[in-house]
Amino acid sequence: MELKLAIFDLDGVIVDTAKYHFLAWQRLGREIGVEFTRTDNERLKGVSRMRSLDILLEIGGQERSDQEKEALANQKNTWYVEYIRQMDTSEILPGVLPFLEELRDAGIKIALGSASKNAKTILERVSLSDYFDAIVDGNVVSKAKPDPQVFTLAASMLSTPSQQAVVFEDAQAGIEAALRAQMMAIGVGDPETLQDADTIIPGFADFTLEDLRKIWSAR
Ligand code: B16
Ligand code: MG
Image (tube, rainbow, N blue to C red; front, side):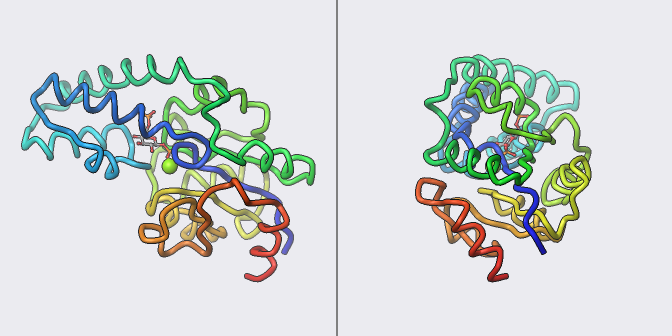
């Protein structure tokens, strides 16, 4: 079956916003007396904002009411948004732009499948919005990855069967979501954490549409 759609996760695949999430969570941790390290931050990749806060509180052995959690998550997001407002095209990860161009020229549809509620702002900041035929983000989905909803919604928005879509993901929960959606799952990054992926690539620096087509036809 022909490849018709490529779905991209955002943080860790197109840009590295994890560093800004880390700064904002660490700042919140400092305010409430929780020590939050870079290693802890790894646990938040691909995880929703509220679930991330739960993890931070768990690390500090703290409990908060739902109302307090809402306020803390909002505070973290205000700081996070200040950081991402400074982003520009230099933050697009190596090789991503030429790869998107190749896909577009070949008539393969492009979608975003991200847990972030700030996805549209980030794409605008790095001038990539125009490449995306559909954007499914944290404002649209009701079930977080590993639920397949984020990806199945993207495919249905573009009237494409799941079996003709490929997903690029840097988080294990996203790989699981893609597989549950019956899509090809390509892991971007660490082979150890992305074991279930159909293939793993270190990034897009040396990755072309020809490479993707080879993987696709070898399925
Ligand atoms: P926000 P992705 C995820 O992005 C991040 O990896 C994760 O750390 C973050 O908590 C989540 O978005 C929600 O982000 O607070 O902006 O709504 O990898 O799914 O693109
Ligand atoms: Mg990610």
